[in-house]
Amino acid sequence: MGISIKSKAEIELMREAGRILAITHEELRKQVKPGMSTFEVNRIGEEIIRSYGCIPSFLNYHGYPASICVSINEEVVHGIPSKNRIIQDDDIVSLDAGVIYKGFHSDAARTLVMPEASEEVKKLVEVTKQSFFVGIKQAVSGNHVRDIGRAVQEYAESHGYSVVRDLIGHGVGTKLHEDPEVPNFVTPRRGAKLRPGMTIAVEPMINLGEYDVYWEDDDWTVIAEDGLPSAHYENTILITEGEPEILSTAPGIPL
Ligand code: MF3
Ligand code: CO
Image 1 (spheres, rainbow, N blue to C red):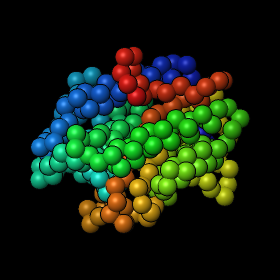
Image 2: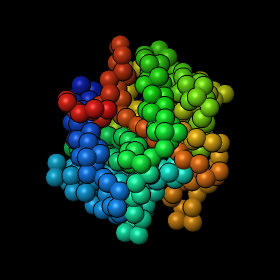
Image 3: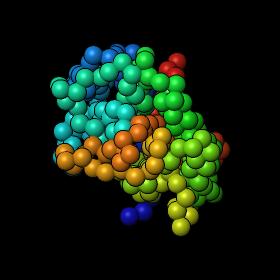
Image 4: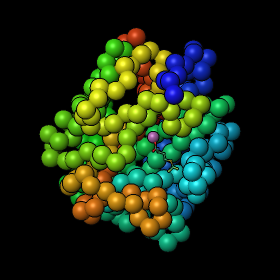
């Protein structure tokens, strides 16, 4: 399948989807506290998404049973919310969410740091976020997808971390996952050439230890094999004639 180039009108819809998603993440950042179940996190997130007239795009996606992926500590991504899973005061909590606004998707993830988290794990979260910004410096017209992955990988590894190999970023638009694939690491092929009007989700998943992961028995939750913490940071971005534009953002809300 080819890579879709979005029109001005479509980009406007994706900006609105991204704005609503950024507001959702900000509200979750304010409300998520130790003692809360991951089920409650999902309930709050879904309510916010629906209050803006959006559809939570993850709900029922290939059978995924919730609207927000909540992944704690060594859980890398795709944790399933549960009433029995209570957030602890030294946890890091990755929240991944997607919304559909008038047929257009936005996809973004943040990793929240609970008040008693260690300095070591706080640094992992910060470097993971920075690896996204280092990566998207390469997300310019004429570059290839691999230029993004190389930058993310070099930055993460320079801090002694490793980049998860089994999951990657992706194009995003009328579907949650579109072409091109956007790995966060160097691949043998250079990948798609970036062009203005492409919209992609760049989503580094960075492990404190080794990059190997496995899937839990629920067939969703991805876990770092060595049991060490993992962080995730993601935004939907637009390739332009100049610097990329982050779409999953809103005025006055920190990224
Ligand atoms: N943001 C996730 C990704 O791009 C989407 C998760 S799909 C779900 O891989 F079904 F797990 F929610
Ligand atoms: Co994604």
